[in-house]
Length: 349
Image (cartoon, rainbow, N blue to C red; front, side, top):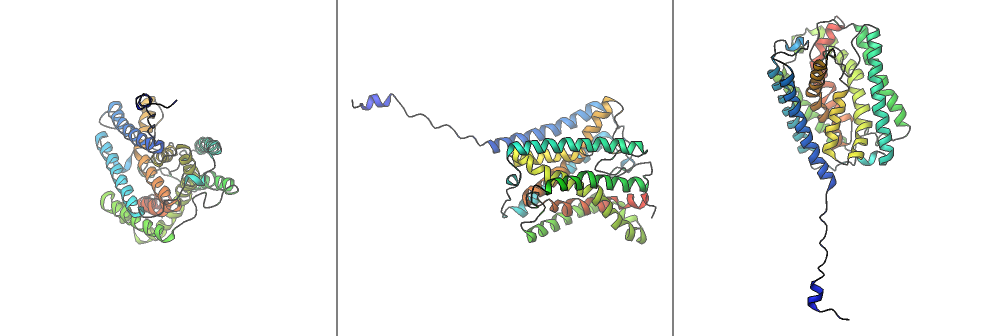
């Protein structure tokens, strides 16, 4: 039977379902969650502490709680500007598919959980080993880095810290994953050396300018002999103990798997920042004697390291090369610039 126009009109065509862009949705939620978390940490610090923080920070003695929060927020603003600069410099580059370098989701999840468990075990062993020797617990920063310490760090402690971190977080994971994945899959090979070199040079110059003009590192106060011996020693020590462990463990291996699991660049950047902060849990200035001290320590670990960890993630994801952040934003500036005087003091140069 032929349907009349009126009968056909009673059966309208089903409306097409609106397409949901899940990766974009995840990215928006990740950005808002990070912003809310950052504001919550600021509020928590103001609520828990008074005018002075309980930490022993010789390099910034006398700073009030509010001043320290202002410093942390200015540092975050600088990192966000650097991220914008990286985006400008890489906007015409072909974006590497970093997620495709990780295995399928089930395997990526297993390897991510394995890495996190291994990393936690490395931190626990570093705590026990260092304390048994009468030293500061081993994390991604040598005791006295950034905030200073009133206690002298022995040369043996510094060397053992560097060797431990290099072996536990760089050599062993690299040996395990290199047997299963190529250098490209581990983000250890450049897909555009000239573009990477330009990016490294620009970011390094900008960050070095910030170090000299704003933070004013006391490297300028060192004598000629101290600079001649201290600069290469600081470079090698921190390259082994901080830079290569972070590069291999977090940015070469863990980050592509996080991206595979989240499907969101923004979420991966945020989680990369949190992962980087987590490996500084045993910084020499952190206090765990009470719940308030532990809470404040965790808050300032995030306030200090979350933004630099995000910056390293952005550099890796935009280039597909984990080496870029090593030279642009880690080994030379800030570590060699900021920590040479500390190394000169440790080795009594």
